[in-house]
Image (cartoon, rainbow, N blue to C red; front, side):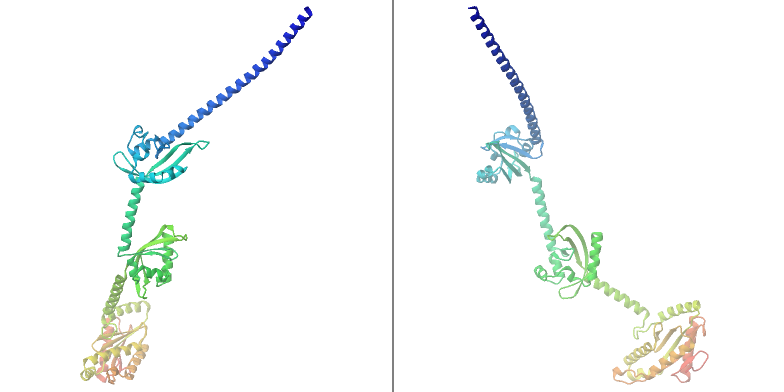
Length: 483
């Protein structure tokens, strides 16, 4: 019995040891599992904290954004809004939560939502414009960016939308449209010409005033002509210079230039043109400008200039013969005396008096007498070259001034004039054949005189001596006849 009891005892001990080892192993596994669970719990807690932090961050973003935010369920009941949305409609958060979205909109907006409800809610993203009605009745134009939220399995979570207040934008658009209408009205009705073109010369737009300036009746005619800006420039270099100035300065101000009308007649315009910071569809730089028809003013200025030139001419020229008058004679002789004294260069003058001119007037009349004087003046012009000049001294008397000619050269010139007169038949245009001659007196500075008065007196005296002894000859100072 003792041996068997020992075996049983040993067996029990072995079994207990085996169970103990198993329990130890189980305990160790449980501990490891516990540690794993603790680690997993910590990880879950960290993720929960991160999720809460992320949720809080996005909640702050939504709450502080300048755009309105609204969240609603599948029945379009509002479940969340931010402060911006509340401010937009003028209600508190508590007054908005639980309300139907459509309660805060215009009838037109409600009709849009009802009409397209399934379409709008069925899309994950939608963008459209609408109108809210604020608490005070004010209508607020809005732009909606809406999204449908779903979980990882695609299950519906709700609808959210960011709402942008378009009031200021709509106001600006209205103001811009009004401004554009005003500009278009000014463009169409302005008396000044207006245009827009590329820098290379392609015409983009022209107002009616400029169309008329260019000689066309309608804009369509001008555009259909296929002409570029360059085709209207009288001188291509004018366009080239203007473009260079535009590129350098960005604008040209009060730039006067001639262009050509449709019929080829000249048009003077005063242009103010500048580059604008945009390009056409082809990428070319665009210019715009205002032009004023300056033709009348330019013609008036030209006429005034011609008048001034005429008056200046008349101030020193004889109206009948076109030769210089005595005013110019005295001024010119003063200058010649100064030049002669400075450079020791002589000059001479010839006094001429027509022979028997009264007989011609008595025979052919005063008009023909005046015509005869004009033809004699032409004879003088034919015999002299610049700087020599003739002067209508008065009545039938003439003076010829010969800068740089001494007595011998002046005598030769006087002989040429006398011979040309004797060869010429006068008043042939009036049907007459009249021969005329003149008595000439010659004086040279500084040989004969030292001042203007003495010089003129000596030449006049030499001429009168010829008159006294037979006429039709040249007299010199100190001699009765020269030729």
